[in-house]
Image (tube, rainbow over all chains, first blue to last red):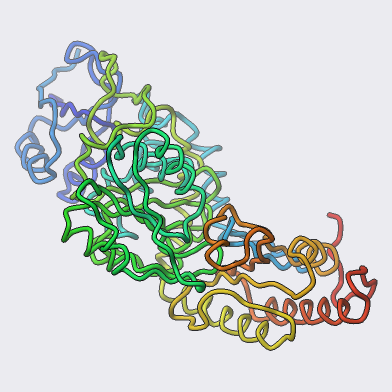
Length: 75
Length: 408
């Protein structure tokens, strides 16, 4: 499946976004940040590409500043 | 929970004990099943550990009605949280107002900062520990930036007018720092209603968590760019940069956190919220009224602090005429298995206010797990100590009221 990842600044921000997505019934997974996107050693939030819009609205609602949302493909 | 029937634990104001059984269970579960470094590595156990820490952050925010769980910073204890607030906010030339009932966790950082050019005003309290908010307002100077108060005294349990001081702070565009070490979990607290801008708490007292947990919660009036961090280091985020991140909570949380402790604190918070702070308060104050009333009836006993239970928490300081507090504490422990704390309780200013400096007092700190029988046995023991003292001076009396604890 094709995915997108939300790159966040803090692990706590990832936790918050995960919880907000769950309240909308959107499944996500916290994964290590893909090296080609960032040299950050923390986690990011992976969602299905179909859920990108939900993810954008959840992030906007949370007021959390993110680094960006990137589409990723299976390697 | 295993209550040792031969011990009566009245030192909850220092550290609560016993804890709800869920606390140890959560900590064991963390060590056995989760165990990893929270959020550092991105694998499932690391993410699970980070989730547990975050859930505790959310519970703290819920209990204190904080604006946002991300504004909860964890620390080792309330002392570290207070140091973060005081060292982080105060600059040479600033003026801070505090009370004469503070613990050394506030007084010592302030005396240290005073040598570096911070002006400190200590507003005197009454001999019962009461603070008149009007005296706080009249101490304000053009360079005042902060008011720091404990919510309740760790010596007498006297409640300080945090909400009124917070109103004054808002009127004068200052910040209010509240040390809630003695009230968090034992007295209703709401950062927004109580006008608290920075709330410093500890996990190991009436939040029923383990030692090594605590934190500082920031209200919306605090500009984090003006609150510098006590330490810098790894946060598991923005690792490509050698500068400390500015976002919350990472700015203040360098180094691997006490995740096992925070798992325990989370279980303590669950327990408090299920039982209800008001119901815990009611239980403790019923016992407190009985203990205060009983102590006052024993001749030669002086009880300090407010008589009115509505104006205090369940911390009782007293003295027995002619018996030093250290002797009372030792005899309660050795002869009766009653554990309390004697002396100055790390609060010399408070004892000067009460007139009990430098000898100090005997302090009973009640908790949610104390029961009526503890109070009866304690009152009987104090009565016996007084009787023995009157008939034999300070000589140790061999008669025991109550079976001594076993060496187990």
